[in-house]
Length: 412
Image 1 (cartoon, helix red, strand yellow):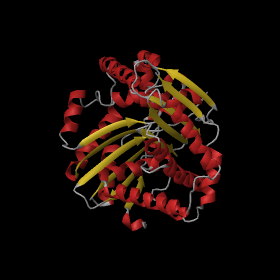
Image 2 (image 1 turned 120 degrees about the vertical axis):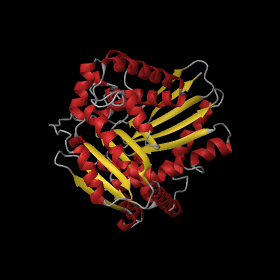
Image 3 (image 1 turned 45 degrees about the vertical axis):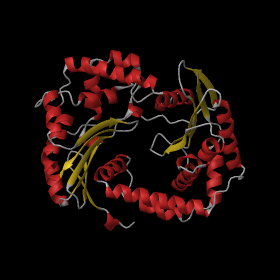
C-alpha cells in the first residue's frame, strides 16, 4: 500500500491538540475524539474513574442539559458512541458530511464544558453499578477479568476497566472533577476526521471549536508493566452452562518484527476459522464450540490469550488438548511455513483494505495510531517487514511467549 491510497494531513493547535484530517471520497464524515487516558492511568483509589467520566460527559454542560445532548446527537441522524479502554477514552460521531460542523460543536461542548451535576452523578452511579454486576453474568467477560486478577500483582491490567465496585459506590463529585481536570486537556488529546472536504477546510472548522480548549500542565505517573505470573487457578460458579479456560501470556520485550511473527503464530494458533486449536478441539474432538486466541500489541498491554468454553464433562480434556497443541508448536511438530507467512500478509492486506473502505473504521484506526504516537502508515512498514520473517522466527517467538502462562478455569 502506498501513501497516495490514504490521503491525510496532520495539524497541532497552539493548545497542543493534535488533529488529523483524512480526505476520502464519501458522502459521510466520521469524527473521533480521543483522550490519552484510560484504566492504566488510574491510581489504586481511582479504579473506574475513566469509565465514570465517559458516562458523565453526556450528562450536562454549560450549554446543554443531558436531554438536549441526547437530542442534538440524535438529530445528526447518524451514529454516535463512547468507550473506555485500558489506554484511552474516546467519543465518535458518524453521519452525512454536512453534519460535520454541528457534530464538532457538540463534541467540543461535552469535552470542554461538562458540569458534572450532582444529581446526574448519583443516577449514573446506579447505571454503572448495574453494568458492573451484569458483567458477572457474562461468563466470558468474567473469565478474562479473573485470569488478569490472578496473573498480575501490581499491573493495572489486574483490574476491570469498569473499576472496583466499592470505589464506584464511593466516588465523590470532587474526585471525579479533579481527575477530569487533570487529564481531559487538549495537549493529551487527538481528533481524527474522515470527510470529503479539503484538509484546510477541516482544520479551520476544528480550530473554530477547539482552539479555546485550555492547555494545562500534564503529569502522568509511570504505568507499571509486569510479566504475568505462572499460576493455575480453578474457580467455581454455580448454574453455568459452559465452563471456561483462559490462558494469559505477556510479551513486553519483543521487537516489532517479533510481534509480527507472533501475529502469524496467533493467526495459525487460534485466530483463524481453520486454526490449530479450532481443528483440534472443535473439528477433531467436538468438545468446544467457542475456541480462539487473540493478541493485543497496544502499549502497556502486550497480552496473548487463549479462550475456550466446554461442558463440565469436557473442560479438563479441552485443557489437555490446548497444552498438547502448544507443546507441538514448541517442538516444531506442527508445521508453520512460508505459506502461513504469505497468508498472514494477505490477511493484513485484507484488513487494511477493509479499514480504508470504512470511514468510521479508518477514523478509529488513525485516532489510536496517534494516541499511541505511532506512524499513521505503519501498516506499510509492517507489510514490508513480513517479507523478511521466516518460519524459524515464528518458532522462536513461540518459545519465547508461549511459556509459563497464567491459567484460569471456571467450572460448575
